[in-house]
Length: 546
Image 1 (tube, rainbow, N blue to C red):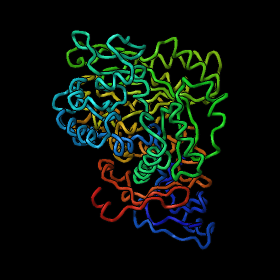
Image 2: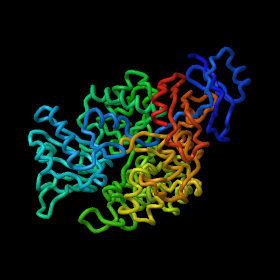
Image 3: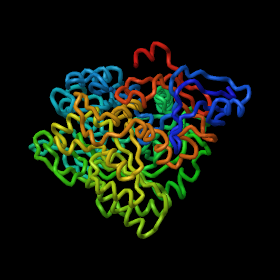
C-alpha cells in the first residue's frame, strides 16, 4: 500500500504538544500528513482510507532496554523454568520435571540449559543444588540460569567443562558458592564468575540464532514493538547479529549495545569499524554493569536489605566493579564520544556511576550526552535532581512492581523503601526525562501491561505500592514511545506521529487515556512498520486478551 489515511478514531500523536489529530496519512514508509481529515486528504489524493472504527492509533512502542531475542531462546532452545504468572513451575519438582524432559531429548554429552528460574516463587524458596542436578544426569553438563541473568547453578559435569574446581578462586565481582564444608554447591553469582555461561550467545549457533530471531520478532510485533534492543552484546553475539544484518531488512529494527570491555579495539580495528551498512540493525550506546539483582540481594545499596538471603544476615549487596575501574571505563567511553548505558539497580551503584559521569564531564565537557542509568530501582530524590543537573537520563523497570512488588514489600526492601522502587513520580517532578522497560526476557515484552503497572502500581496481590510514584497514562505512553526514541537519539525518526517520521503505528482496541485502570486489558489490533501492516490480530484473539 503506497498511501493510506487513518481516521475515525482517537489518534494520540505524542508530539511535543500531545496533539490529537483527526487523521494521519502515510506514503511509502513515512508519515506524510497529520491534522484535519480534509487537510490530509488534500495532501494524499486518492489514498486508501483506513477506518479506525473508534479505535485508537498511537506511535509504535519502542523497547528502551531488553535482550532480543532472549525470549525465543528460552522458549525454543532451553527448558523454560519460569513460575506464575510467567510460567508454570511452582516447586523444584516442577523444575526437575522440565529439566528431565530436556535431558531426554538431548544427546549424551551435550549441554542442557534451563532458564528463567525464580527461586522466590518456588515452594522451597531456593535454587537447586549441584547434587540435585547431578541426580538428574551425570552424562550431560547442566546449567540453570536465574531469571535475573545474574546467577545460576551448574552440575558437576558443567563445572568441569567450565574449568571450575574446588580450588578455583572467586573473581572480582563474582563468586562460586560453597557449603559449610567449603565444597562447591554449583551456585555461581556475577557475570565475571559465570563468564560466557551468563551471556545470551551461550550454546547458540547461526541456525538456531536465526530461528529464535524470527520467533522473537513475531512476538514483539504482535505487541506493537517495532524497535527492539539487545543491551548486552558481547563479541560472539555481535557476530551473529552482523550475519543477519548482512542480509538486509530483518523486518524489525534493532539497536545493539556492545559491552564496554571490547572498546576501543571493536570500533578502531574490529567489527564495529566494518559493521554492515544496514539501517535496521545499528550499534548504539556502550554498556556497563555496576551491580547485581534485587532477587539475589546483590544490587548494591546504601542501606541493608530488609531481610537477608536464606540463612544469611542482611547486607548491602555488592558492587560488580571497583570505583576506580568504573571511573576509567566511563572516561574511556565518554572520551570516545559514545553514549553510555549502565546497569545500576541499587542506589549505591547509582552514586558511583553519577560520580564517574561528573568526573568525565569535568575533564571533557560534552553537551547532550544522554548517558543513562538502567533500572535505577531505588534511586533517591537527591540522585534524580543530580541526574537533571548532569544531563543523565533513566530507564526504569516498573514491571518489578507487578511481578515482585510483594517480595520487595515483605522481604527484600521492606514496607517503607519498597514504596519507592522505580520512582517515576519523583523523576517526573525532578525534570528527568525517562523511559520504562521490561528487560525481556526477565519479564516478557508487554508494553501495555508495563504502562498499566507504571500508572497503577499494583502488585500481584493487588497491593498498591507507592501511590505517590504513579504517573498519568499519557506520561507512561510517552515513556514507551517518544522518550524511548529520544533516549537512543532517534527522536527525529520515530516515537511520535509527525510528518517525515517513519510510519510505525499501532492500532489499539481502546484508548489508554480513557481507561487508565484497565490498560492491561487493551489489545493491539494492528502493528504497522515502515508503512506496512506487519501484524493483524484475529477477532478471537482480541476477545481473549481483552
